[in-house]
Length: 196
Image 1 (cartoon, rainbow, N blue to C red):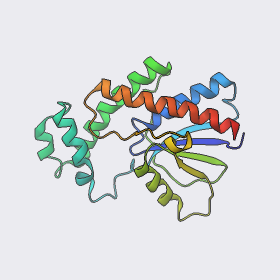
Image 2 (cartoon, rainbow, N blue to C red):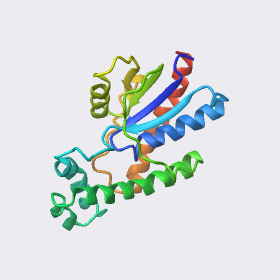
Image 3 (tube, rainbow, N blue to C red):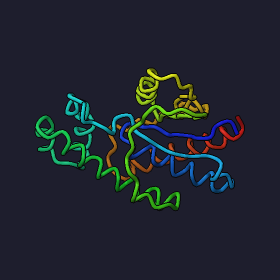
Image 4 (tube, helix red, strand yellow):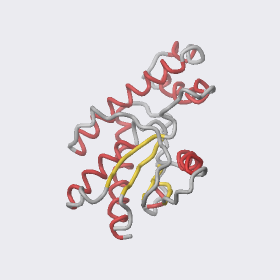
């Protein structure tokens, strides 16, 4: 086995990368290698304290959530004054979906998941970003350090053209469809990393 750690990365470490982490852990357990490999997840924008444009970044997600009836249209008007409040609301919605999916489909309890910021770390690591945006951000995070992890997008690592971006999710069924794609790709990634 080439890698001692696989880290799955998305933006907020709330919806996609925790699903990949849960699948990775379950797969490692089924293969009997859970003591030989660390499976983790993180997000490139978990720590938003230094972001001056948080409202602007959130706007497309909040607009989609309002269109789909997940939050009130009034919250869109409040995004500039209370971006962290809107972010917390969106995170709470997705967290419920994530916990439900992981419990129902993977058989694990992730209600205690704590969101973690992506930070550069040394070691023989495979870092798999769920989409091209988080791939670029992950590479930027590592660019100032003399570490040499393998950093790829999850879809390209498993030889797929899957689209794992999540703007526009309209409810649990949409989330589940996306999570199933992440699930299959993460499972294949762990298996492929074993063959590397």
